Image 1: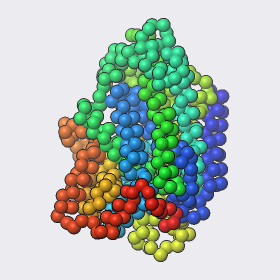
Image 2: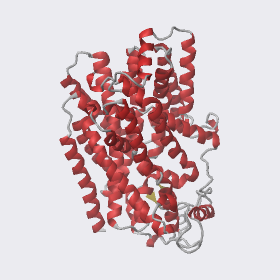
Image 3: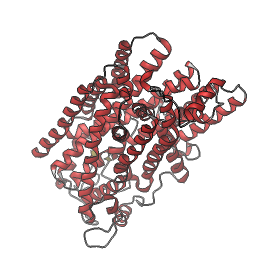
Image 4: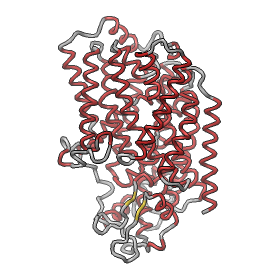
Length: 579
């Protein structure tokens, strides 16, 4: 146990020292450095940074946990997030890079020739990004609480301090180079345990193949067949067919995640850090490869974690584990409060069933599965320590990117773009850092009272981006006629409908007790859950915008020419740092 603690401290604090050193080396001295890293990042570097920005706590910590408990239903996260990234790379990023501005609201202000449109875009961006950060903060708290053996709340405070140091100091330049290091940490931390566990369970060292292989115990049974048998014996739904709220909800959820992904400001901003449109396309290709390395392993990690958990609690069919003989990893997670046992029948044994009356595992937080997985599988201590560093890297990298998106939208879009256009570069940089500090505090507070598990909270953020920012960008690029009035009403109605639906089920600003419809599934619109409602908000946004367009004038001639220019693959490219 002491050896594990030593390895964990070396891995976690060693990675922190690396991030701080990089942040100091690449600290931002100009607004161009702070917002777009001076526009000089190579496609390969940007691809890795996008990979880290992308693979947040939701991807690293929560997604495999969701797949572990939802089975086939959890695949919406894989399909939605990956598909959305392709959508972003093909339909939005190259055009926005050619236009060459710092931020998403700045692009919207230019395209819709309106300060009001810019302000609405900033509000939508802040709402979506803050919701997204809650998920990262939950991940930070979960990882720190276990591996530094502190309370969840204290773990969260430590994470906030670490993010503050390197995000506020380095801006986009520091964050980019830190994210390259974080990608290396998190990809090794994710794949190495998966290789070990796949080898242990199936004899196949490639987890993607191990998922479809027979077990190594000589039974000749396929891993997924065994898992189906184990979970259905305990009353849970069959792992390989459970479809999470029906086919309509699955479809809406996937689509909402896809278009929400394509509307995420902190990912779009990454494409402004490369020198050209060609480099933007190349970095998108590299990023897809880097993302696929983790995303294709996640289903195997989820399934194997669930099987190992079930086999620990019920080592032999019909024989439950004595609570007094529970393994060390079980005790460690009990200390965090994320795993709870209650002896309901007084026999001293752990009964884990789907029936709430008899189930004695009263809390198994989905977000612990990836972090607990190496210990459940009895892997070496250095692997467990590596996973700790990886989980923390994943949460910190995305939190930093989101904080930068919020900070730039306030200091660059609201202050310089609308209210104080004469602000000096030095003061704009200072304002960006102050806003980032305030954002970290707000995010920390929301992380102390999260509205759900990390990936579920993130899904809400994607829904908010899907219903507001994505349609405005799509119409701005592909409809030359679209005018400012239509776009503004579209954004307001899209995010308004989505927030109304989410808040009535999840609570106003996720405050418990204000959810006047609660989680009542009979009140779901066409059976669509609040987390999947972004796609309906997007439809409302498009519909309202095009109706208003029919009753108002087309965009001015010079705006239509500008759209034609950034839709043309050749010609002048404006560098983001020229603005």
